[in-house]
Image 1 (cartoon, helix red, strand yellow):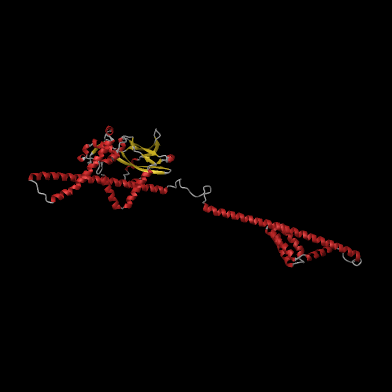
Image 2: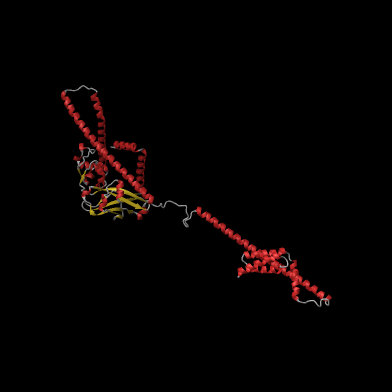
Length: 481
């Protein structure tokens, strides 16, 4: 049987390509890895035939997944998922509900319940797709339930003893596959042709062995029984290979024996040929059933992997993935750094403008104060000089100027005229620029004072300065108005 399985894999790899075989190996390895996280045990049927179905399936949780138990839930499957796995979706007609709960021993279980009893006509076995989902993963598993008469099992075409034993394993109280096979063989010896477990007849009814019979079978004895059955299968294969050799030796011309012995030999060879032909048919049927079971299992694994891949596409990123973004503002460093540099540059530019304006205003006030002090000192010097000269002139030539006008305003105008004549035009231009600077920094009052002072002296010095000063003063008054 092992050689037949290997030859089937070799033919499969040659027919569909080595890459597909590698894919199947990856599927098996992957399924073995994920099974370590959270697995499902053997289902336990709590109901009797004719009653509403009630099944419990143990959940085995690893230490790594213990924190995800609050998010653990059972998900219902649809018809498309059953069809994708190649199993019958008739079980959906019975509205079987599934939920995750804890038993009195605080052990996690999946409880399957139906409202109405499942009829026996649905078959002795039904397949049910169990789906579990939690925050960090999910699992899918197809379980086979025995719902018919547990004492009689009808063997279908192509079914083998190992397939039936594996389906009935949940009913055998933890017995191994070899023990279940040996118990079925001892309970139903007439169902096997030639007394070998390799030749199970189709259409017969197998009786379920009792628990006492199962307990009486030693596991080592069951293993030897399976090895002997495998040896018989190899012997049948060797006999089939030896058949062409016997025919070739007959064709090479051995002397014919006597008539009596010829009849006996003819009858013996005829019986041998018939037996070999029967064994060959049974072996081919068994090999076909095994290959069919393997192909169905491979299709189930592929469909399960496709379901997991579809779920991984919809599932968001796991919590283990780290992002390079800042959590407190949600902006990446690549975007935040240019913004930070721009803010620093803007702040520096504003500070520089403030310093320039502050220093410029200080300088303008400084020069304005110096100009005012210079103007006042010049007025005082000129007035004192004029008063002294006027006193001397009055004393010396009083009679000469007795007819002259003594209006003090006229003397002030002449004094102012003499002071203005002595002022340079560049000084008035500087003062005009200071007034412009005051306007730029929005110090309109200081600018108005400067412009009025310039107008007092610019008429006799520079007409262009006077005109420009008048225009600026009009604009300034409009702004203030």
